[in-house]
Length: 179
Image 1 (cartoon, helix red, strand yellow):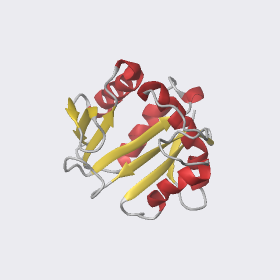
Image 2 (cartoon, helix red, strand yellow):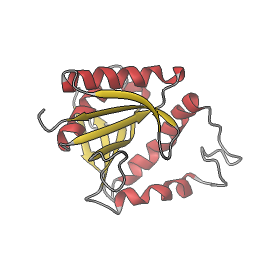
Image 3 (cartoon, one colour):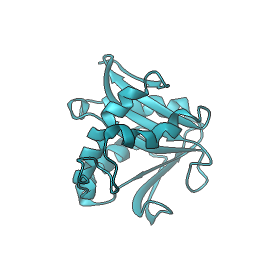
């Protein structure tokens, strides 16, 4: 299995846009979301996936600040990761994992951990990752604990806390400059 991460650009962002509704569908199980009256996972009157994708255009307009990665497994699109830097990071971290998603056929096979490690190695500094702390999200919580424990040799912190813009979360922090 060959896992790779590559930054997307204007010519390849459509692949991430294709995957994004699947990500929101998976998150709906965790957060209890329902689609709006047009079948789009938004809480407003967004009518089409094309309209929904326009919200994320910012990821391709700030090349040195926002990093939209496409994850591939054996050259097949398998997921994505969005990495932000200041001013889009919370709590003074240098890097914030804004979104991370793997399609179901690639889960549980080590691809997500391999992709996360490649992503971390591409950006050295202080990191923050937030995830839903609820029982419906145990798989992601376990994934991040296992991956960060392996990657940092146990040198990471986690806490449950209210966030400024995104409610109560399980927050992971680590510094990978020495890794």
